[in-house]
Amino acid sequence: MSKELRSLTKEEWNTFFPVELVAHDAGWKDLFEQEKQRLLAAIGPETLLAIEHFGSSAIAAIKSKPYIDVLVAIPSEHLFSAGLIQQFEALGYTYFKVPQRESIDAYMSFGKGYRVGGVSEQIYHLHVCPASNTMWKQLAFRDYLNAHPARARQYEQFKLALAAQFKHDRGAYVLGKAGFIADTLALAQAPVVPELFPVSASTLDAHALSRFVAGRYGLSPKSTCRLLKTGINHTYLLADDERRYVLRVYSHNWRTRAEVEAELALLRHLQEQGLRVSYPLADSVGTFLHEVAAPEGPRYLVLFSFAEGGKVRFLTPAACTALGAMLAQLHQLTRGQPLARPTYTPELLLTQAYASARTFFSDELPEMQYLLDTSQQIARAFAQAGPAALPTGAVHLDFWYDNMAITDQDEMTVFDFDFCGNGPAVLDVAYFCLQLFNIEADKQQYEDKAAHFLAGYERVRTLSVEERQLVPAAGAAVWLFYLGVQVQRFDWTNFFLSANYLKAYVGMMRAWLAYHGWPVPTEAAPVSRGPNE
View 1: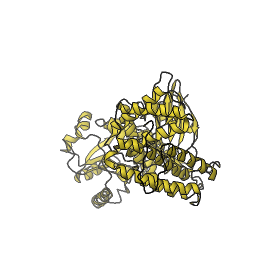
View 2: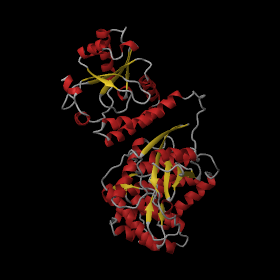
View 3: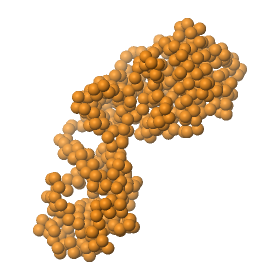
View 4: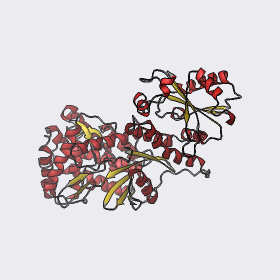
């Protein structure tokens, strides 16, 4: 069988033993220790000077080929020794000579567990060479990744992309990792810098981000990057000749990796279905989500397509009709498809938001008392409508003119799905109407545009009577939710968050509800009308 294994062609190796990554197995460490003791007992420590577990199976918590890679140090005089080769072969290993490549001298390699026609048992792969061989730098790579989980996760994502691309080309898979390994070794060998004082937030350098993105997305060296705005997340504009992109840098601990991945999956689904959204772009190896080590901790980066056009504060009735249809399409395409994102219940929108507001504003303020009383009425309105009358699915939750671009040809693109989640579709409908109400001082203009928006929406999906009745309450619920967000994310860069601001903010909510027949007596069921109804 050993002779057969040595006689395999490159194509046969790639066919019988494709690149397949599996979840990390904590038992791999024990398998290594057992094999190490077996080798020492059979050959002896005077010949096997050091035995180390390395490779991805030695890196905690990342996916790996299910192989135990072992690095063995021997005296230089034993390199390519026929006697030593025979000793390894007596233990069931097959010998292969690894030729010199780049800075790595030729060395001996031994494999065990390979079976022609597929893997049938645990594979061990020994790399046997003097300690002076550059191969021993692999230990620094292993140790650095075990000490830096964020970098290890980057390596895992990089390998997964390579494995998908080169499943049946082991050589290309190995060569594809060389650059990442070299960069990591450079990090491992970098001088130790003094420990930085902890920070709560930082702004990443635009020039460094330009280099980071250009190297991974194949942009030209002349590409540029500039900061557009800071906020909950930071947004940068990248330009490469005539092409433009938007880079979002998520704040540390704002979203989990799973939440960001769910957002990106939603956007890709919508884009594939023909909805005009700003969608995530994959790098040269197919990776959409990147992670960098910022002073405050890991931050996620995503490159998005650029939404052509501009923001139009005063929308035309025709634009409102088109946006209504677009929103309904979004809801139809995601109905009954839960996201790994927040679910917008009255508890989250109202109770938790009010609790957040209380951490900054005194509940003795009349505006806070109004919010408490009104939130209880809104909760009752949702309960009275009942879930059966409120279709749910993915919601944008921030669907208004500030998150859409419109060209001179009336092409519309929606962006910023950072608050997307699960919830009743009426939340998006109501919030758009509320923002329209706040923008249009002439309420006849509001009525006309809201009617066009709802008509456009109902060309695709009909709103239930309960949904229309719930529009005032649902809009106010989202409005209160964002007050809670503002308190949570306030960074003290100005003095806008004050008692006067609260008075103005609550005043807008009060005007919206009053226009639609609120407030109602506490004991009475809410009786309200939707826009133009």
